[in-house]
Length: 439
Image 1 (cartoon, helix red, strand yellow):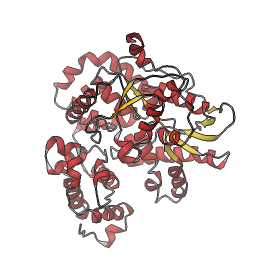
Image 2: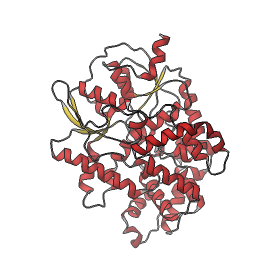
Image 3: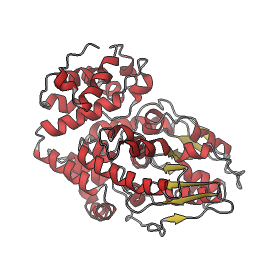
Image 4: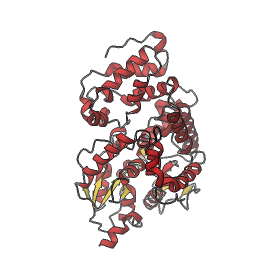
């Protein structure tokens, strides 16, 4: 693609990177076939190629984002399926991130949209506020239909519908900072503290800790870590995201420079994709560029790390049919595709692969709140494909996907690591109690 940026514009590192991405695009349109919004809506401007033209025009001409541009940029899920499909290696992720930053800085959103985004950016990264919000949502949940009927309040209705039916729980080991390996120590890793997942499903990290320590892995959760920044990053609130990134880099570097780390493990694949990009996000910060690159190089999804370990033989023979949902952030963002399925099969589960596995479920961070209509259609399509495989349980590696899919099906949804922990000596996930009763 021919570009016409001035030398002054290219002096900005973000613009220079976006120009590299734009010039790689050859207009082939292969990306349209695998873009969820284009598949649903059939609008060229809701495809990666169409958004690329809008972004190019906006950035080249130093224009503030218009309502039209903001609409189509906002509709992008950042599922990155287009990056898997693209034969030219267009790094669409960096381009759409820049576009969101530009939209946030130059577009005057409607009042309710601004308030909703500010609320999400403040509440979701804070466990304390998120727990309080869930309590309030449980009370207001019956009124979701009323909110949906009021113009501008559809996101509020979506939040209420996504809220869990049970109060937010707290893991007994939430404040524990070190988990020693059982037996001979084979590795030492840090585990992302996170924000939303420990509130919604603390059982996930508990399962990962049990499994890893049984394998001889020492786990640390350094003081000072927390939200990875992805939720605010994908809303264009770049300074908030970078503040989270720096806090995590500081926390993990203390461990790297102290006793050392073999890996930084993440059990939420959406967070993992962002952490693996810290090196890019902080590349222009002289105090953090080198350190962020070290952190990104050590970051691994928990399934990616487990695939390189020698897991013990299963202590049970579950024989359960598991539909594996490959989160977009894992299969497209991190290119981790076979490891989770191989691990589940090796643990004795019958792994089922639903049709259209490359298409997003509609979760995408805060997308299912900010774009509830499109997200709902994507969820219905995803759930229909999953249920056609006749699974007994659904496994995924991302809390957002688990929450989104779980809201549309009665089939229990659990994290991949929960099943692996159970098969190798841990407790059965509570969500599978119905399977035990049926058996």
